[in-house]
Length: 217
Ligand code: GRF
Image (cartoon, rainbow, N blue to C red; front, side, top):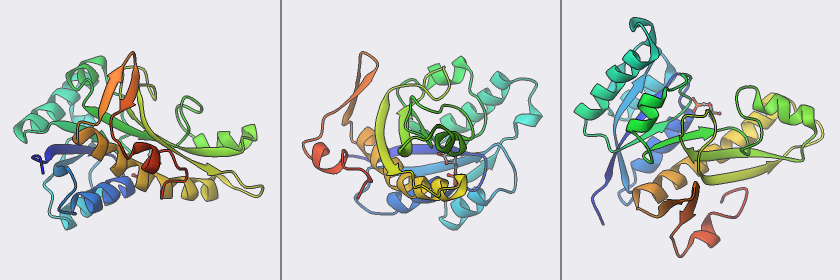
């Protein structure tokens, strides 16, 4: 197997997606190793999860910096010190500047709890129910300066049921997030994604069998 890619994960909270990535990376044949978890918020559950998995953590609070870019420079310094090659945002609740996004162009992933380009921003499940859509889901995408945009790597859809509340729908989508994110990161780490004209092309013979079934197996 090719050498595992060194991955850094940025979080702000509970870290259930982080946990999914930690669990995937614990498998010997997974193509990524998580070398650092950074939270901009101290004391969050995600930090505990990382520590339990034996992954080095750091808290870099945005409150300690005069502006976004200086905060991001501090994050970058840590990531560079760890030799990070790919960065995953996993419930990281800070808007990133063009500076950071450009630094990690094509190597920065995010997960968003909607079928983008629908429902960018917050309160996605409430809005999906409010619009009466029949399917909701999640998207893993490369990050570009515009929020919740950028080339889509993996999506998974789930039904919206008649009596759904935002919490019920969120839980159904979250289950799929935990499958989609490890799958997308593996594709990127194995060099099976190529961005062409702003879209991701997947170069994996098994892809139609594994990636386009929704919900994901
Ligand atoms: C997830 O729903 C993710 O899609 C969104 O923020 C939430 C983070 O949850 N970006 P967790 O911290 O991974 O549990």
